[in-house]
Length: 93
Image (cartoon, rainbow, N blue to C red):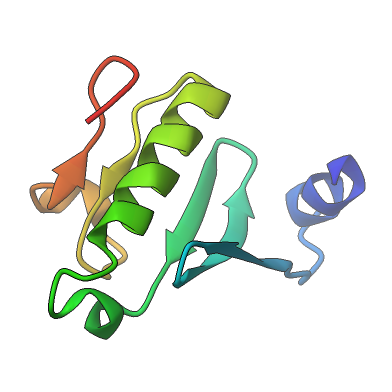
């Protein structure tokens, strides 16, 4: 993974994607910067609230594993310009 970020810092056009399944939800992970990892999921899978527990479980796991706040936003390139839809606070939601 270090080689991937080293190549990005040198301006090499590389990409990486990781798929993670939690319960019934799939999360696609994109590595854009060593300080930020972006996950995406299909919100239609949460339309009836049936799989919300899988989302909650993933957010808490990510918060505890990385020891960092986890923020869910709408898809955008300007994450700091919109309020979070969900976020973890001190090791949990």
